[in-house]
Image 1: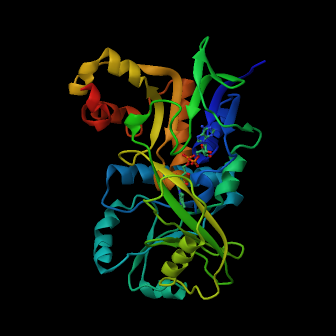
Image 2: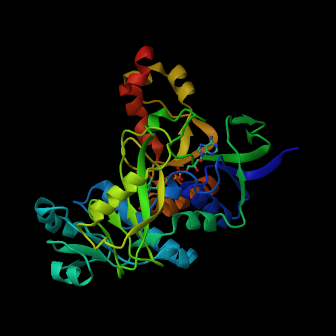
Image 3: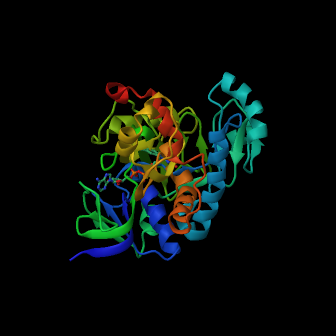
Length: 374
Ligand SMILES: Cc1cc2nc3c(=O)[nH]c(=O)nc-3n(C[C@H](O)[C@H](O)[C@H](O)COP(=O)(O)OP(=O)(O)OC[C@H]3O[C@@H](n4cnc5c(N)ncnc54)[C@H](O)[C@@H]3O)c2cc1C
């Protein structure tokens, strides 16, 4: 006997949970499958700071800042108690960085103020530089947010090894559905997604108990959370050498405390828990949202595509992806899930900035993975 749904989602991180939530809001019957349970991948490790991106107005910055506006409203209206709107201060790393901050100001799309270093000292923050304060930014309880979004949604602990279509339905074990969404983070062996260039970057965060009065969160080379219920979160490392899931290392978290000591008084910080996991980024650092191209078909039918021809795309019927959220999963996921749900249900075009199609033709022309076929 099969169990039938409108959509099966594989992956119960913030990408899968937000997609399930958005589809359910639109009336779909969805099931979420995850091999280790809710927020067991990168999402469970996230410090889950939700703040804007600063810089000189790149396309990625403006997309991030749009997503930030959406995310902050989303968390405030859906799970207010799990989003601590502490504000986030962006502090220059050094003199050179401080010089750049004034050129960033015209591109601060979101509400902000400049805090002078004296003002920061009064808040318990040591820095020699004036900084940006984003009052609407904050920090999520990462695992709790994922759990909340999946309330009243069927979630099954199940490792998917194979997906296939039969009679116009996707088949995953005993589950059947019209649509299938891959929200599997850095692991991507269920379909040919090579053109998306999904890569993992390992990271560690530490939660420290403390009595320090710290009402605001901050980011410099690491993020330091405000003291919420006696816990200060420090995150995160970027450990490029780690390619597969490994046990979390206490030393990495203690290294974060060492770094934080230049910003705040860390003398009473005691390590309570270490979290670690893989962020998954795309080749160009933009999210990946939408349909999946039928790669074997395209390469076989149109070999000239590897020399620059541009035939019409053929997609795998009703297979979708939401991935590539990088180090900002909790910023991007709500808006990206909305975009995906509108595409699945209403057939709305996906924003070209996040449509994975953008990466396909270049991959066909340039990827060494295809050298043997050229
Ligand atoms: C240390 C650290 C700190 C971070 N800090 C922040 C931050 O401050 N702010 C922020 O916004 N983001 C932060 N991030 C990034 C954020 O965590 C990621 O963007 C987010 O995890 C991406 O979510 P995801 O759902 O795409 O992937 P994941 O959370 O990795 O979820 C993928 C899920 O798919 C499941 N899965 C994979 N393959 C299968 C299969 N075959 N069958 C069944 N299940 C499968 C996995 O078990 C996993 O649970 C941080 C990440 C790390 C690691």
